[in-house]
Length: 157
Ligand SMILES: [Fe+2]
Image (cartoon, rainbow, N blue to C red; front, side):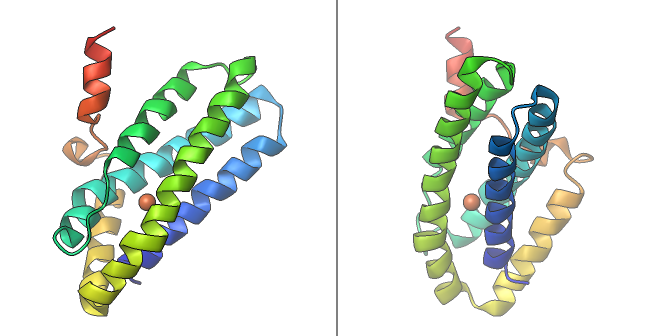
């Protein structure tokens, strides 16, 4: 599998989970789905930031700000009780930010990576990304580290 195909699948999975969370108003179900969204998103951002984006750097220029925004809103959302009226609004904001990230990845970054890296390099990247996802728990330094923006915000509290 190509790295870009794998990342597209992860985008699909996250968007499907957003569809699921919007269909239920049960707090426990929302919590469960939100936990799945968090896990998928953190894994996705981790492999993009640490493996995929560095591999395509110089050929394409992804904007990591999108990941910072996702992390900030995701952390805020995790602080809000699913029964709280703010939950819905924060979900919508997160979904919109992710939508913009997906569009940029899929319309700009991935097509350029597909053209310029070649199938063999993309397959090798996918293997490295899968290995990182499989070993994420045993290698904490590979987990999605808080972005500098998030750290700055936390300090200013
Ligand atoms: Fe992505």
